[in-house]
Image 1: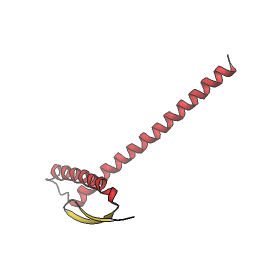
Image 2: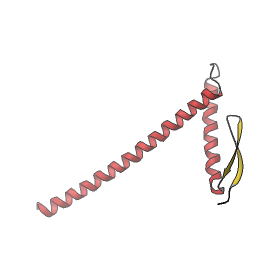
Image 3: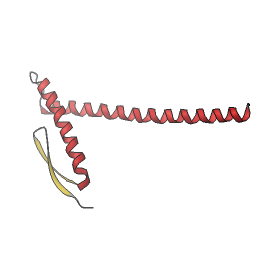
Image 4: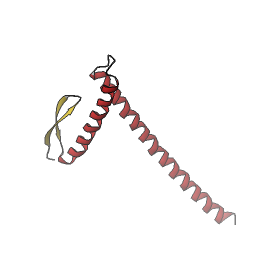
Length: 99
């Protein structure tokens, strides 16, 4: 697969990346989200001793929590689907065997 070289800047540092061409938009959107969140933390903690590492750690924590929430939502969807399937099986069993 062909790779392309791009550079992204996160928290005022530039990083070279070799990516598949179809990944560029997703990566740039992710970098934008990281930088926006970083800027919010930096501006809200400008009076404290928080440095770049501290602010990036808080951004990482924020996105990790969001990822966990998404995982729980996916698991919830699977459980709901399983319950619906069991409900249908039970209704079928009652209709066939108890009527």
